Every structure is written in C-alpha cells, then in structure tokens.
Image (cartoon, rainbow, N blue to C red; front, side, top):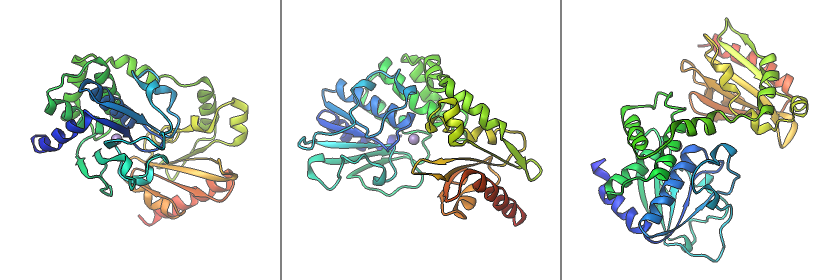
Length: 327
Ligand SMILES: [Mn+2]
C-alpha cells in the first residue's frame, strides 16, 4: 500500500474539485459501492461530485446511502476537473455521455483491479491482486487520514462483499477481511447488506427458477449440467429475463458438476439463444464458448447461438461431450 501514496495524494487534490465519478456499464456492487464511497469522501474534503451511470441500477442497491443522487445522463455543457473511472478495465464499458477525448472531462483518473485491462488514464491506480476496487478506495482513505463514517463503511462493505461473492470466492484474502473488519467498526451493517443484496428475490424470480430447475439435466457422468428458460416460462411467471441472472450458478452448485450452462432467449431475437457457462475450476469454459463465437474467462463465459432454445441446448450438450472426450 505504501507504494501508492503519491498517487492517492494526487487523487485527494482532485477530490476537492468538481469531479465526475463513474464505472462500467451494468454496474455491480463494486462499481456502485466504490463510486458512492468516493462521492462521500469527495464531499468530506470539500469537493463537488457527480456520480453517473447510464444504466438502471438494480433494486438490491437501493439501500445504499446517496444512491438517489446518481444521475443517468450528463449535461453536455458542463465541465469537470477530473473524471474518476472506477472498476473499469476498458473504455468500451463507459456510459455514452462520456467522451474521454473531450477536454471538458479534465484529468482521467483510474482506480481499478481488473486482471486484463487496457490502460487509458492520465493517472492509473491499479492493483490486480485486490479482490475489489473498494479495497483501493479504503487505501485512499487511509493515505489521506480520513476516518470512514457509517455511509462510507456501508458503501465499501457492499463493494468488497459483492465482488468476493459474499466472502466466498478464492479472491477472499486476509486483506479483504481486514478491510471488512475496519468497515464493521466504522458502522457497516452486514445483515442489512445481506438482506438487500442477496435476500431480496422477487417472487416471480423464484417461480421462474422452479421452472428452470424442472428442466435441469446432468450428463457425462454428472460432470455437465444444463438448464434453460423460455419466453413462455417468462410469460407464465411474470418474471423478466433479467431475473434469470445467475441461474447458471444453481447448475454449477450440484455435486460433481464441473461444467454448467444456462440458456435463455436472446432479447434482440427471441428465436435465438443466449448462453452462460460456469466452470467449477477444472475445465476452461471460455474454450467452449469460443466454439460458438463467444468468450469470457476460464470459470465464467458466454455466447449467442442463432437457434431456438431446444436446439441450442442439444448443440451445447453434444459440443461439451465432444470437448470432454478430447480432454
Ligand atoms: Mn470489481
């Protein structure tokens, strides 16, 4: 942490000015939590922050202090001293109102932890070993001798808690838990976070999950699991397609399963399918996704298939079976 003191000092200079804070499209808990924490810090040191996200924020984040001040568009005439891009590995995922080539956004300051990234900031604070960007926001606090208040603690807790899957992923390390410990002391409420982030399922989502679990199937001696939802299931349950997010994890969670996939209709063309893959760690699912023109990471990947659900599902099972034969 000692190494980044000059960089954090520079951040602090800008935080006293007129700044824009943003993160990647479809923001997750780390993106939103880190941005709100930085917003609170900026206000404490006398700056004027605007937090911008183009996309609608998930209802599970509504409990966070200050979330209502987030805007979904930027006044095209307004000028800023700096834009803070948090938890962002590529400029492709910036909101459409931000053009980094335009002088009106001032200095570009990046605070990030992505392992694969294309540098684009005038100042880059990147720590690829950090489990969440929220950890780096806490480093900024520590370097600046600012004591976190309860709302900063709540925001950083959200960031580190969600990016480690509730302190469950392999990225969960001593450093993360030490930060968590300090956030608890500063007033973070773990049950408030859990209830909002992980236990606020809409009823329709659970009904949809029931239908998906009903067609869950395992093959290849229990190593592969697949399931799907159809437009008809969405209609029957009143659920939206977004509610099916992370259903694939239920398939992965089965005993012995190494490769899980989940198929849903493609919103752009309902006769086509979208697929999510998850690996338990033994097989790289991005290799399988690439066979269908998709991609991703070793343990999480996705692709589109220009076929209806049932056909796509058949193709997936047979492609995975072939893949396993060659392993
Ligand atoms: Mn993150």
